[in-house]
Image 1 (tube, helix red, strand yellow):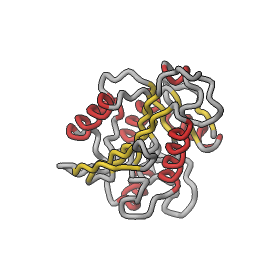
Image 2 (cartoon, helix red, strand yellow; image 1 turned 90 degrees about the vertical axis):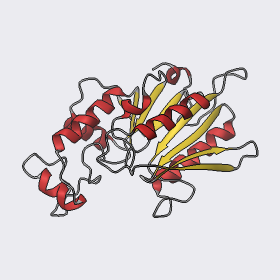
Image 3 (cartoon, one colour; image 1 turned 45 degrees about the horizontal axis):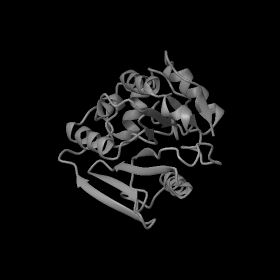
Length: 235
């Protein structure tokens, strides 16, 4: 757990216990959409949650929050300046990233530059939609703490919601129905076993996992069946 265990408030702001002389903790939030304005749409729940959390952490004074967002066409690096205002740097992606992209060398290079320039201690992945699906590919040999929040069912299905073709909650479906359902929802052909295998490895790679409910946490464990996993914290 490394630095995560040392700073019990860096992701869920509460009264600080780290002391006045504690070094600043640099946290990088990974998102699928710019929380200042959104990509095609206004910011949604996850983006607003991260923006509010980052502002509260910055106000506490012991955490330096940085937001990294990819909408599949451009990257946004968003930080809070010395006046407390948000500022953004944008960079176009030479090759679009979609929900089948496993790795991307340009994304990885820019991500590594951010890790080094900002001396990131903790990465908190909120969504991989429109980012490379293999987290380890862009983290490289970085040795900080990795946190993943499972806001929805993206790790289980590229359709995100687990709502089947008949409008019911499928609870993960099965190999007999998933291919046709996913193709109808996304317009793409997916190997659902391969998809879940990639995200199983992502879950196993994390130091800490958050889920919005007990049912989400249980379903992730049931469907992905990770071999190595820390407890999923429900909040």
